[in-house]
Image (cartoon, rainbow, N blue to C red):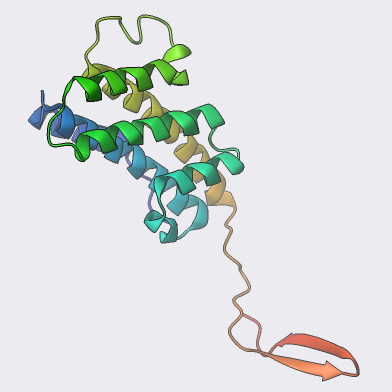
Length: 184
């Protein structure tokens, strides 16, 4: 099993990177979303003891986490909205009033904002501050999931302890049997 992540160190690195791009909306949001997706990938890598799902798209990963009850559906929807906002900013040359309005509309639809006290998202917050707060809350949630999963995985692995390399099939009468040639 991989060594446990040092989330404090990762958060410190993220904040240092944010400081370097301070005021650049596009860069800040891409960086924050990358950290959210990093935590999702780390959860999958820990869960499956394999990095194969890192190549899957975010929506697929979110749906799987929801199906496994590691992520509530409203979180899935909100993280998809964050990814959509990131996409708008990453794929548009200029950030105009229409994009800003679309972002604000997405924020209004997000359960994480609706379910937060008013002091979590003050009324006059900038898009950067709202996005940063949302990402920090989700990273905190994913950190909790990661640490719970890590503790569980230390006790129980999904990997098959019986490695099946040498086998053959035999037939006795009408019955076909699967037989191991050697046992570990």
